[in-house]
Image: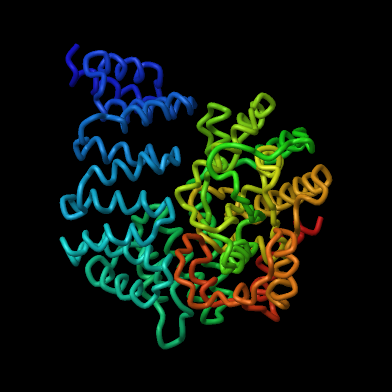
Length: 518
């Protein structure tokens, strides 16, 4: 069979989820062309869908090691693979090998920028988007992508200008209204409510588009103080998003049960060789929307702390150790295989993989909230790590989750009862970690942090082994990229609210509140 037929068959089998047959076709192609990077990258995709992390990783690295510069189609297929494995060295080597950004097409520039942004290198992502805009100043996908990165960088006026330009060119794009709604507080004289409602009224909208528009409408109506209509919009948004997801609360309960059977060893020793040994990780964990971004920004204002943001570096090492391509921070397969893992090796690989991000600072923050699931594994792999757990009022936390449109990473957050059930499992697991690891975890209360930041940050500094610095209390004007749902709010600085945001929605939230209090 010729190579073209094998490629066609491989893709047909993959579409039908016949992974072993797709793999066989691709390997037959490699027999004839052992160094074909396109085939290797596709094979990496297929093998990862079959759940085999190490083989998928090996194929991607083999493709990246091609002696000659890869053609653009091979490079564009391979970049997402390398980013998924957190192989930053190979990723940036491939990126450099593609030559100056001016040589790339607009779709290639947008794809590169997207992958770079996932690494939380927003300034570099913007360079590629600037080149795309030079090539075509009016292309809506470029304008949207630039606006998103500008938001991460705190350049809100520029982001709004890009979105308004996009709206003039393509007024039907749902995402631009979602982004516009988040940039500032809307007023009676300056808002997009009527435009959003007009877009929502179109009958051919897909669920994901309806979710974007309904969340935008909720945000703007909330700004305007129309809480009754805002609640209706939020309900529509949640139902639209939930319809696109597969989630069962029972799966979370079983996952937590499995994690609670894992007993962290208190005799573990810190890694004593390899790069990065002098680094002290500070993990900031908790529910999403509990204040983790604020705490990281405060800590990263210390001269000896490097903030690296919300990354999946530790989960990636767990996947490698388990040889399982799971989703999210952890899954049941990885938990089951954790019994046989070499946690010293996991810790060494984790530190080595982050070294390229770090400077002269001795400390760095790793702020992935859902790493609260991994606390037992973190304690084994990195005994010298500090673990800060953000604690916030359950209703405030859950309401903030409910009104936030995440990616598919938080499927529990679009239904009031499912969200309350998830929060109960989170509290159950955190109680277990505190009991199993006395003294290893410091709870940081969000309300206290906003009311008396100096007292709290002095305690946090002492727990981490840092000397308190007054500069930690001033985060306004910080230009470091913040690629989280709090990208806009955190630029406002420390804000203590007298009245919780959920108060006007108490009646609407009654099912969730009652479930949380049970």
